[in-house]
Image 1: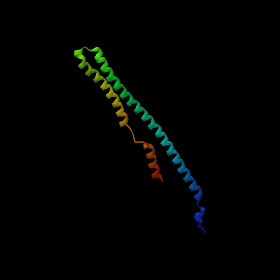
Image 2: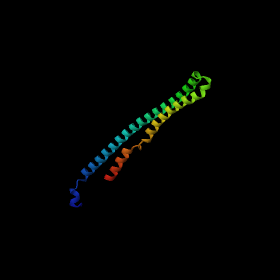
Image 3: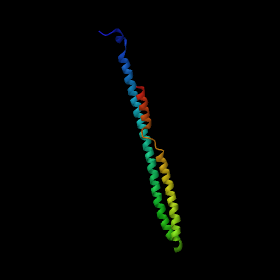
Image 4: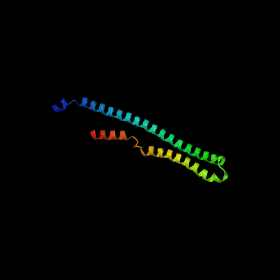
Length: 125
């Protein structure tokens, strides 16, 4: 025979509410994880595009510098002209790689929001 105060408790309803809250919390966390995955995918594509532009324009600049130098300069100015044009293409490449570096330096930890929310949930439960 159970004591009267245990019979008065509605443990079935309380446990159902707790299970519902846990299920909703898990659903919210999975949605947040999916959102963060999409954001990280976009960032990765942006970084790859910048890297490709940096490499392509570095190589294009170097090739054009060499071709222009030999076609346009008299023989006594070829060395100086090659240096100037190569320097300009390298400055452009450095600019692209600095943009890439700044994008990578501003990188946050993967799933930072999800981990923060899970920590809050752990503190609540």
